[in-house]
Image 1 (cartoon, rainbow, N blue to C red):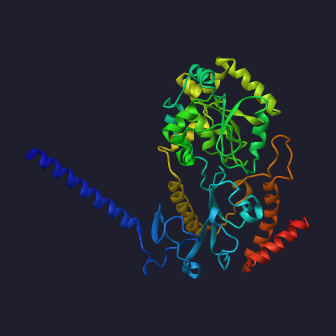
Image 2 (image 1 turned 180 degrees about the vertical axis):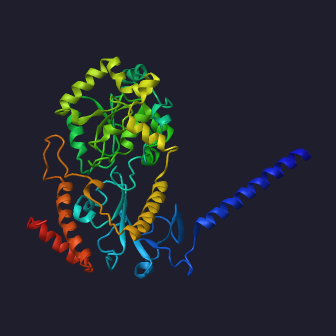
Length: 435
């Protein structure tokens, strides 16, 4: 008994020492700015997002991060960071100083803020962290599963079992589940056409023709990554994975989820999505088919030929040497020793900007964010291959081109933005086709 008490005491003592060491580390790496920190540059989060009230050590550089807008006029202010979803035209810094850099972090599609699809808006920023591989701190791997998830069989259902589910439980071969029915990609119009040629179980609010069980139905958007929902998706031979917008490198869990569970994704979204597949036949691209009927015929071919179907499941059932052959993906997974959450990338971005500020002070080089940092072309109708003027989001793209032109004028000339006047001028330019 005494021996057990001694062991417990030693364990508690070691734990306390470790906690003290952690506290000391945090104290030396993150401290409040004071009058002695006159040489430490200030980086202001324009709206609360990253670190606040902390001096952060980034390699050989130090910067003070804050939400406090009183620093806007401080001589030590060297950068202002904006979170894209919170970026508002009528809430911007009073002055765009040539000595203060602007940074943008935005992981979302243009639905949140379509002004960012235009160069004149992007060029106002010096640093970016977006889903694009060309961004300064790319976010394309935020939702990327790790190697064990991609290759593992935790949720996997064999082809034989899936066929039995189609026959015995009347499951359709294709799964579609969406609740955002007003998208730039106008995905529902394609799904409706595809339904004419092949059965699709459509859950969620869009084109609903099937019911989730009660456990999944209640707040199902909060359960998209729980074990029960993933096991449900795994029952389907194919999953329709359509993004809400088409942008280079904008790839979400819509692609990763079916890859993880072993349901073959039928994908529409980022034109570069194949760069991140485990191998050449891990998913089916909608763009490889002239029309929905042609895609449906191909899917029937796979449904009637298990060997051909299972070529798309090599990452789950193939030999070790053929399961993950994409060198680009392998390199990313090797560099990323663990699955990082979004907060990790925010920390990385803060340090990137901090280091760049110190480098700029030495080299006097200024970087500019360009369209390839957020590359989202004008939406097209997937069925016709042309721009659909009746699509609300096409009009938004064009309208915000005028908005970006005005924003550039206001910001670079340090003109205070009156939102009513700004909107009136934006619509005037739009109606004149002068954007």
